[in-house]
Length: 125
Length: 125
Image 1: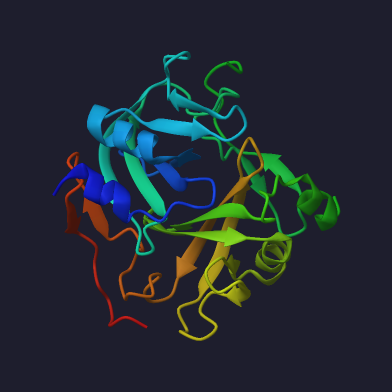
Image 2 (image 1 turned 120 degrees about the horizontal axis):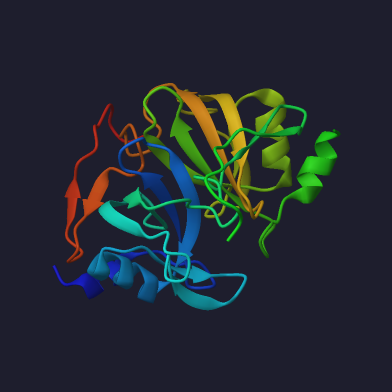
């Protein structure tokens, strides 16, 4: 199969994006959710490093390009609707720019109270 | 904290939605990605069952309401940007409407080839 056929088969949203869940290959910890446009999906598959589209900065980025906290792709999965990807990675350092191993470092209880439960590896970067 | 303060603090996209990653509490398997509007986040936190907004059907739904394949919430986390939630659940039956345990039942290789790797528990529902 040509990679373009796979890229064509994805159901991009109105902004041309699919959601990408990044999970630690070894521990199973969910590290982050990012957004990928067609170029970022191609880049992720072809390079073996996660690539994203930043909705806030409106730019393409390779995870770890500036921080060094790269994500080496171990496996990629696509969901039934073809609008989301699951990427299992070997994470180098903290996945979160706030220095936590995972971006999901705050737990929320049934009344909306937030508690920091995640492991902080470094200062914010 | 009032639950409304938490709901106010989330960064909903232009359609009023946040992404919600649903993960099996026991196995760590990522089961699905859904979308939640404010009402669905509230419903999930308050009821202990996952609630979503269906982008395709444009309607509110409680997971398992028709299929019986409910998701009992064990823990909820919010990410650094507050535009994504991670919900750990006890999944009853198949999470995927195609009958697979997880919606991410297809693996994609670096050339875009897809292989079914997920466990199918039932027929599509």
